[in-house]
Amino acid sequence: MSQTTQAQKEQQLKEQQKEQQQQQLALPVAPALPAGAADLRELLKGTDRYNPTHIERLEKYIQEQVTDGTYDFESNLALLRLYQFHPTKVNADASAQVLLKMLLVLPAGDYASSLFLLSDKLQADESIKNIVAAAHHLEAAQFIQFWSLVNATPKIKQLMPSFADEARKFIAHILSVSAQSMDQLLLSKFLDLQAGAFDSFVAAQGWAVERDAVSFGVNKDNQAKSKNISEKIPFNNLTKLLGQAFA
Image 1: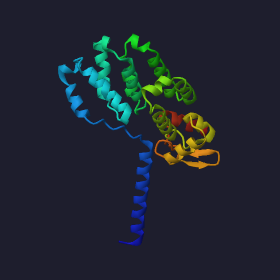
Image 2: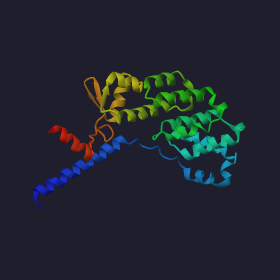
Image 3: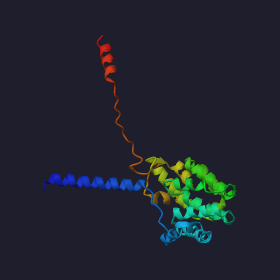
Image 4: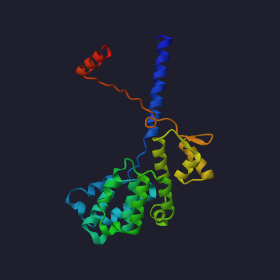
């Protein structure tokens, strides 16, 4: 094998590795399923899935997810469905915890699919109303307003102590796939972090500080993509244009 061919192969390999790294940066890490998820899902199959005796176990299960950072969409949705069929057994705090977990998962369809399962009474609950308002700010990329509401609602931290940390990771991902860099001051407001805490978070993400800006690096989502635009002129119109040009 010639040295030129070997060098080309090595260069191709480096480019492939770089592309894989960029793709990994652009994709959020999906939360793991809790231990015992398969057994619980099996229990929720068939006609027995609407048995109200499952509610207590599912409520403990969402608490487990809040504690250890795992996530099980199917089981959480099953809990909300059981509340629909058994309204006297509704637990507003457990419902709020389900919403908080779903809110910070990409893609964002999980949260939206859960809202229609909430009764009018549950949607009138103060904690639920605050979570829905926070979700609106988050979905609209109104991150400063989002933090203002979260910080003014201590119940959110009580329901899910890790919510702020997970929200920052969520926002960091959104920003990193939307832009290649951002002003430090604005970024600190978007993440609700100051001084040393901000510096530590930036370092943990692998971002680079460049003067007054923070560079997120280049990934497949935040690169400018060129588009090939071809304009087709009908043959009849083309002959008319040529005729006018030489008239």
